[in-house]
Image 1: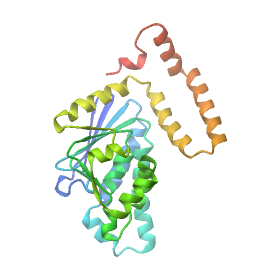
Image 2: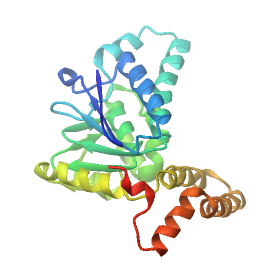
Image 3: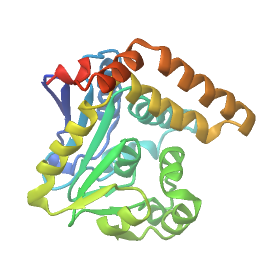
Image 4: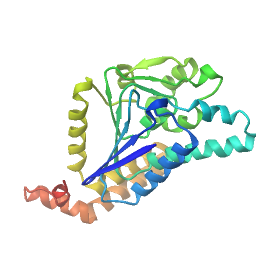
Length: 258
């Protein structure tokens, strides 16, 4: 269901259920969570590239998985949804930079994956949609990852209408960061990888934590957080190395990693 490959500091995680457009089921959710938890503890990995095999990135929920939930009790559905949220949370909280490569369709829970990426590059022909309302359901679990990305206004429009939208529109609302012709996808991904490898790995991790914290903290607490964060960064080994390298006009130590 998943393939994880390594090339030095770069890991690539590919969803491999092309026969169902990489849709989620309980087993895929569990495996994704497990792999992300393993990556979180491996700081030799600095960038994770997330892809889907076949014609689509991820079509959301598997029909057989949804059918099984129809006979679940309320408590069983709570547990099942909790597993899904835990998977998204583990991906969202990875200390490494995560690049999403989107082609074909990203629907429902597939957009949840997109929202958990730090940078998203989509092909011009990619399409998106929160299609749950057509089934009388809600994009509920993914909402806490999607709404911070696109805002409540766009979420209300697309959650309630279930309309599909283009990659260009996804760029406009902040879900996607770059839209490219299909033939230029790999070049754009390589450029993004190089940008992340030029940054201190601890700085990347702390920057992700900074965005998450400032987004939810009250103003006074946010002020204390940001002041403490920059003070810690300046005195850290990585911050000291970065400043010295800049002043000495040389590459910092982390740039020697391929």
